[in-house]
Length: 110
Image 1: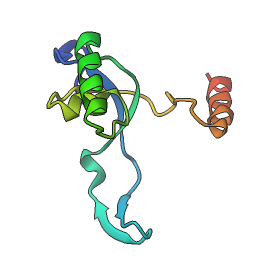
Image 2 (image 1 turned 30 degrees about the horizontal axis):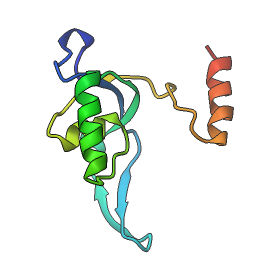
Image 3 (image 1 turned 120 degrees about the vertical axis):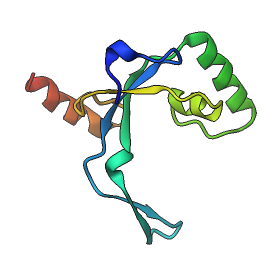
């Protein structure tokens, strides 16, 4: 992870180290491989990337029907590797109804 003072020109994203053991499975849900999590991170928001470059790569990736999961994956597809800045695991996205309960818990503790 980089420090905010060393932000790369292609931008950073917030990330947090993976704390759990990660496994790769096959299409049938069978364990195939345990992944070394020491170099894995959870991507968080916001992803602070240059807008004009991001738009260009998002458009190109979508036109090529490349599966894009977030802004950083569009940059990665284009060969640009954003930096990772240490974030907090309580910085969650509310994308599912279950996330609201977790967000409420985090907010009540701060």
